[in-house]
Image (cartoon, rainbow, N blue to C red; front, side, top):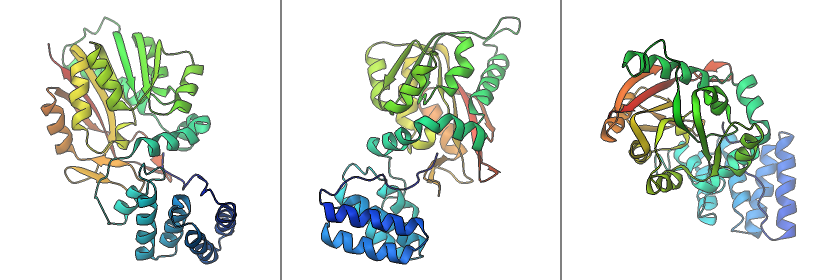
Length: 319
């Protein structure tokens, strides 16, 4: 899922708000130069109008004015400490500022809140998303290869956590295998969609790190932790993997998908999703005390008709 631009947040000034909406209308008709002029007037009137600055940055970028776009995105960043619009990500994409800034909670929450109602259709019909099905096959194959399950016995997990569960696409694929299924997601709107499906025994609205910290404190144990198409929104996976290792039961599994790139480390893609190199994945999994059972190429979605380069991974916490 990629961002489509700023959601409107009022400047508090009626005239500035009207100018902003006029600029959006001009841009929708393809008159980007006029839209940029109106937005420049708008931010002259209200210099802390983060939404207008962000829109101005996006339009200048479209017009090929990189320096002007950077200047506008910097203003949007400075006017919006919570980075609701994702200005820091745009600056990183343009090669300015921090190379791989973490996504703020407010940015991720609003990104998925706005997509929740049409999320399933967008992923399954337009992006041909098949992450949960591919993960299920990978988990079963990894368990057989590692002798964690004998072939005649049906695959079964006493307790399973769907981390970043979204609307429940992963839960739907794994529910038949789970005695107890827990889902956690940052977006209240996504959790509301998941709740309608009646798949989960427990659903929690929380950011990943806070939720995992609470589960650790409460002594929770899971036989399988699933992270399908969620780690692409996390820059540094080391704290997440370390926390997951603490809630895995002996011989518990972590199964996840990521996007990848040809180098090492972390890379912010033009889609504003993070890609993680194979060496980085192997290192952070090992540092968390987990043993990698499977790391394989997998295209779990498409973008503009082309498969997205990714990896599917399964790791175990040995007893």
